[in-house]
Image (cartoon, rainbow, N blue to C red; front, side, top):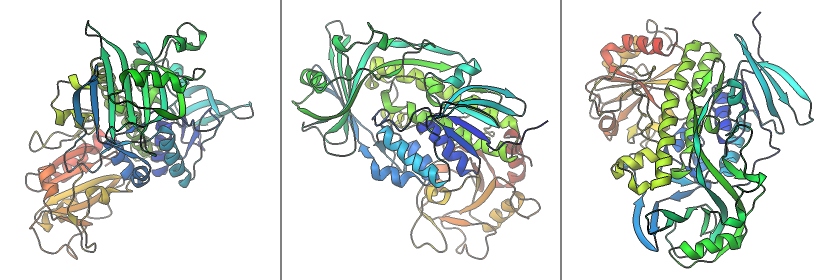
Length: 553
């Protein structure tokens, strides 16, 4: 007999990834629970880099403004070797990219997401741990240990493991987690430095031995707040090594990754490294937090099975180089959440969920490989040209061309194609606002797929809009239609368009999307392009896309 679930989705783990999954699911109207074994947020500046693509996702949610008000800009990185400046990397992106690189301590990211989620009526169930689970055709039976120590059993629709490098969900699914560990141990410190280095720049200073190997390292990432506050990482001195004690041994899963909570370097440990390697003399002060940590690089063989999935560190761990981990995990969560929402609501069939693994596993593999290369060889050795390198680090090039949901390409090969990120653009005008809008303004708050219809002629748009509906009636479930009228086209939008419309007054939409004549674009709920087609083929193209996504026609 089929079960009726009071909880559609249970999420294990309330770090940035679990919070993002819960926030997206609740935003789509899905009932979910979020459990975490910890009694409160950890006050540590662990993951601190927020990529421009993550800020775009937060913009869609309505969270970007709060993030920007609490973050610090990351402008670049200065690289030193043996006391000499070797490279200066400017974190510059094309002008149409709406956000830059940001630094935000993980506890602040979690606070913002937690407050956003509370506004949607969901709070974290603290001191609650997933003990075990078993799935059947109708759902997942989960056993939880609650704050009182009692065990609770319930049946939920789906389970997402956002429970970190030692994931109970990953182990319960029997996923492999192949990889290895870097030999070095590091110490982290949240501290202030009184040097005169430029604000907003990360510092990477190393000592290169005669044989060309790096035998000493200092990495400093600027943090919000008082000037000179950094999250510093450096090699561990022998007296703090965890290797010779039980403190540093791998867990029962053989994974050595993350903070060693019992070891806290003191200010003088950090100062000694700064004295050796800092490009300017500096005195450290106000040590807020410190720890020793180890780094592994591993990835699962698949991102889920049946009704159970993994995301974030439960699926992939790797060096923190380039601040890719948390951001990749947040995109895992966003990719999975909209698909789960459609399936839970009955707007799409369960087959849609298989695309989560198909789309995200290759991304995870690429990130693990790239961060290991950058950690061992240095980002400055990357063979890509600086523009491509910056866009990849910003996660603007993450895409799913050739994936199971990507419609056939249409138009110029170097234009945004199905599977690519849907670019933002400025200069859109409407009939009421006396100021130009960005495409992100138009998309903000929407949870459904958005069909963008671009043309010179209003008649072409109206015909395509009719083809996108059932006989000209209400728009089909899961699809919102918006017109983008070409610059210099029909003079008046009011009263003649059958769907909401905007004018490409600055020509930016045409420049960035490069339509060839009247063109339609399907923008997925995660901000990736799902389809691109001639407006004359709207009905057939949408039918093809609905087939690919298991959405009924």
